[in-house]
Length: 497
Ligand code: NAD
Image (cartoon, protein in one colour):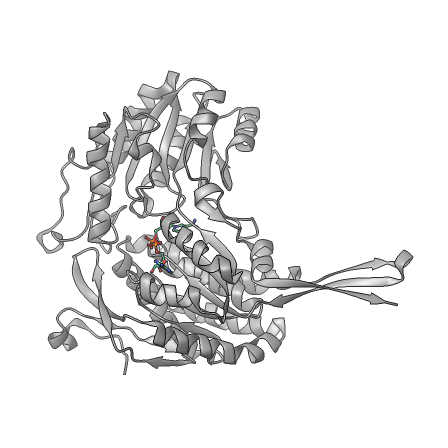
């Protein structure tokens, strides 16, 4: 039926290896229209996915609504058992999922194996174990002759919308807390990276997951995505993606008073003081700027370096970037794969032009260093890690989210000055501060207007900690306690005794 095809069995279909279908009420359902999905390493079509419309979304929401009563009445332990079974099965298929994720997204295989899929497994396990400890509270008021207690009730049908940069990782970060709290869900993964979500649906069938609790519709944001967020029976929307789409969803859902969580773009700063461990800092900022080809919302894209070490920093950082091997996702030793799509590569390249127009100097990367890829990969969406200096804080590359392997380095003099300059963007997702002075580290951490500050490290995550952004980067937080609050409604019950 909807099996994984091999290239050889697909001669009529060209290079298509995977044909995905919507997953509704526990079964795979054909969609009237379909669309193509590309392998970023080669630029060739490799998957066919449904191009769902309101019709398919309506069917998925109806299935989730029907399943709600049964799922929400299961005990927490029963719901947790279901999630844990899926986690175990996913872990046992780690290699297959990592290969598909790297093929579909463009990221190196080692990254999908060491980060994306293990984190998806952890998401399922973490929320299954942790949320139950946070669900109910009670209080005594003997002077009033009452006891109070709070119920945390599931909200209903949750609409989950996720982006293409960390496909299964971010989908499961929404799915696991929504489900353990007793909601049923309709998920709409990015049209650019749908394959691992489709494979995940197949796992669900293997584990006897109750039908209708998880429904997945594939397709475009403006059709399937809009139909989902606008559906009157979807009481909660959890969105991760660009700030422009988040704004649109906030406007669309506001009159319906839906619960809304928005995890959006970033323009994250690193602030490097001259007393820091420069070598450790450069090693981490190389990763922070270029991992997943700069396509992580938390990636660093503005580096402020204190003037006494500015020249030395730029020199060593450029040397480090030049060492990075760029190439096809499955190749040995590759640190950076292809960018996710052709339009995205073109957008990122446009910013290099803007940088030059705005007076910047391209120290390495796009247009400076030669990119070598074998003939078979000539049409892949590759770009070398690019470092820009000499830009003003108000320039396009210092203000807009580029979301590619591009980072700007600028000098600063004082702590007060750099605080204002680092905060001078429309975004506020995260920042890192590099110094051996604990006072400086904490003062900076307190005054940076972002959701997370890392000092002398980057992207160390504890799922119990609140995660999210301020300003154009987000609305709400995710993490054990925050996700539990978001995916439930509190009800206080006051009883006379
Ligand atoms: P995007 O906004 O284009 O798409 C994200 C998702 O929204 C996709 O599934 C898309 O189909 C859907 N969508 C698009 N228009 C829609 C609409 N009108 N209604 C409903 N759904 C719609 O974002 P993207 O390009 O896929 O992802 C990159 C962005 O995601 C970057 O800005 C990045 O910073 C951000 N991001 C943020 C976080 C975070 O945690 N803050 C994490 C990862 C990515």
